[in-house]
Length: 76
Image 1 (tube, rainbow, N blue to C red):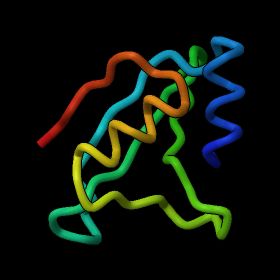
Image 2 (image 1 turned 180 degrees about the vertical axis):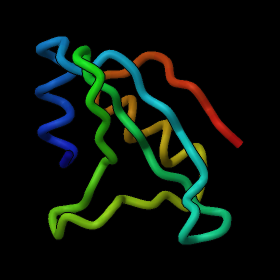
Image 3 (image 1 turned 135 degrees about the vertical axis):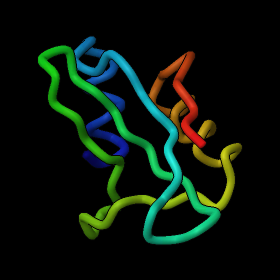
Image 4 (image 1 turned 45 degrees about the horizontal axis):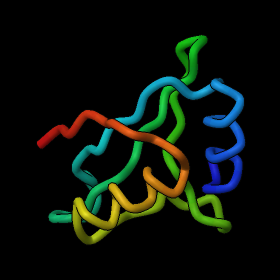
């Protein structure tokens, strides 16, 4: 799910949870996993449909704040 799609889905209360998880493909990077009310999960992706990877947890949190989240689970 792209950033603007995630923002719209969050505003419409379709998305209900977000997780910050380690990127298994890039050690030290983080990815966002967002969950819908009906149980579907989506990674935040770039405009090229590649999973968005963040160099720091702070950068991942800033993206979640832009989407509209006020809390998320951190897995490490």
